[in-house]
Amino acid sequence: MHLRFGSLRTRLVAAALAAVTVALVVAGLAIGVILTRFLRAQIDGRLDAQITALRAGLEAGTLTARPERFDGPPFDRPGGWIWEVRRGDELVRSDSFDERRPPANLMLRELDLPGEPPARIFVGAPQVALYGPLRDVLVSLAVALGGLGLVLAFGAVAQVRLGLAPLRRLRDHLAAVRNGRQARIPSRQPEEVRPLVTELNALLDENERNLDRARGHVANLAHALKTPLATLALALRDPARDPEGILAAQVDDMDRRVRHHLRRARAAALAGPGRARTPLLPRLADLRSVLVRIHADKAPEITLAVPDGFALACEEQDCDEMLGNLLDNACRWCAGRVAVTAQRVGAQIEIRIEDDGPGLTPEAATAVMARGRRLDEAVPGDGFGLPITLELAELYGGALNLGRAASGGLRATLTLPG
Image (cartoon, rainbow, N blue to C red):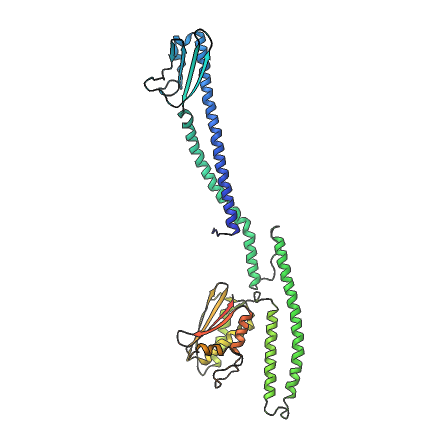
């Protein structure tokens, strides 16, 4: 699971791990305090019991007669648990008391008894009696809490991943809508995501209605323009009205431009090209088979180095027009070889069409982008191919650039959304 700075996943995981860490530290400290109090209470109880026994023996007179009776565990080990009773000049100690090596770091309890002479009882336990068992328990506790922390950390990561899964699915559905694989986002979503999905589907419905209205307006405009143009074309068939055919050619050109811009208006009504999807390699293969026959006299070799899964987010007819113009231009000027390659650059696909012809200078490459401008009048063409291709590419949020290929010919780079 990759964590990225500033993402919801990173924030949620970091917050969960911080909470788990704080909780485990607090729990460890609290358990440590409770265990310390418990062990200290046990030791205090043992010392109080020893004082009670010593007091009873002192009052009964058995302490000085048989002090070894009061050296039961744990007071039978040197340097550890000790007891001592003083009454005037009389001193009775446990066998565990070694004057040459008096125990250090003792926890002492003492009791003064009234009488003649007064008596004082001392009992003590080594610090290790408290901190030794406490250390052993805390080591085991730290291991257990560390294991629990790992389990909780993995649980937090799994919880975040599971909780954000609907957002990942929503992203996939949006990509499917954008690529034209589905028309709507499924409404069956978690309660927190459902309002967002409802708004997105409402937006898609509104765009669909706008598209239908735009198509109706385009149809009306087509009828309004093409009918007068058809009338003019019919009238200009009379040689007396247009002896040289100049006006008829202009009418045909106007009709072609009207049809071209009506198609553009239909595409613009989509508010972007995202919902169309055209596989790239099949279109290039079809265009190659057509152009090889058209330029049979030159018999150009057209190679396609395009991944099979690439698809363009544009209408099929627009894809054919753009690629067809560029491939036809390359076949017309090449010496015999045309190479087509494609690669993905971010969210776009970059298509390169290179030929081994004479190529263009930077000034000439800029000039041929002007509508109707032709550099060689001897070669058939009307000079609208490259400008139309550029216009279409920019309509879809792409670009068209001309440069020099490694072979010295022209390299046309067409960039379109994938």
